[in-house]
Image (tube, rainbow, N blue to C red; front, top):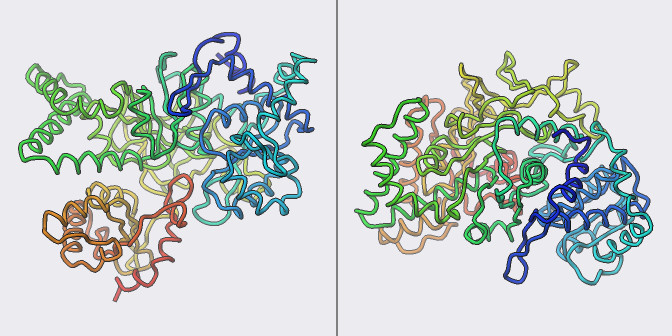
Length: 595
């Protein structure tokens, strides 16, 4: 069905499936279900309260929060009156929050809890446009803040006098009106605000619906930040479009436990989650007895052979079919149980996923469907499906959208999914959108003869050595993290004689190795100085990059003493590595790799 705007889609659920569970969240140790009627009623009260503040169509309201039901309902409330939502990652520091609020000219701010309100209090005096501050979780508001409960009550009074107040407003919101401004992560320079229309999201949802099958019995576990465009579209709007129930994880750390509790059928994440799951599974397998290790790797090989035949369109045969059933019973069924036992498929986006990891999970019957897109394309450009996928590929272009490769290898796309432009930044908009509507993604890739898109790297990340050789670091970095000892890696080499890397090791895997070797505890601060550990990592790097050209291979490396994190500045809120920050932080150590 085609909707005029996103709010119409959401509010229609109150009439169509009023009693169906739309959301689920955990409170005081138990999961609580919320029907579509309850959710829409609450969003309507928030919308009425927003009108009472004087918020008008086109005005901005911001939300600073982790994933929760309130986040979702605030979004629908804001866009139902024609206003524009500005999501802010809760991991950002006060000065970053101040920049986004001032640049977007947000008039209202919703903050999740005391952690967020305390950050905002330090910058409040520097926010001349923002006049209303609402706290979402507190029962009693702090000074200068209104509780969401009290805020809703204001809206409820107006709805008593005029029950059709918000419904009438929804009718005035057009498909080509702005719905949100999502700021890019800013791996270099200041963030840019992508203005996305109701039409951008709706066209993306409608196009994806032509190639995906969803059921109203599906359950999606939401933990990728709603501030991230992938979760906003797929785990928020698209879920409502298909009346999929959404369960909000308590936190990233609680995801493994929450999976067992709610038993989702769908999950969306960036590759980092799948990389950590893969490393954990391999580490567990390798710590088992020799016979258990043999059974595990036999099962994986059997599963891979089975999948390869499926991809080739060849029959598996009776013997392989029996082996696959045995492998599932002995090994894969245990992996599936740890993922709740009901997963139909995972979705991966935000960065390329290692083909090895995708193949491993597919062998276990847990398919990770990779897609490709950006904040500016709301987000999906290409998607893999259960019937059409290739390991290492981001899938095929969605229906009613276009994708092509420029002469220099850059990926271009055109269609209803492409943003209106960057907010208050016509120069940056002109840099990425041409007169024919083509959006220049900044990514390098190619499309094979079957129409599958393969991403090579970010254009700006390409390393050009002093010898003039071009090296795409991302595929090599993806190879390195296949080692159970290596958790993160950044290749170095631009304008240098050869390639090196900064790597972060798995404390747990190193501890297990050290114990077997009889070394005792090795502290992370000493990883780079431990001669035998460095020899182990060198062997791992050599093993994983043996197929690359000599100029692409890593000649030396530095072991960082701590992980790359958002808090320490090496990662963006969407978990992309800030290469310039890593290079600057470890400048002396990197320079020492080039005597």
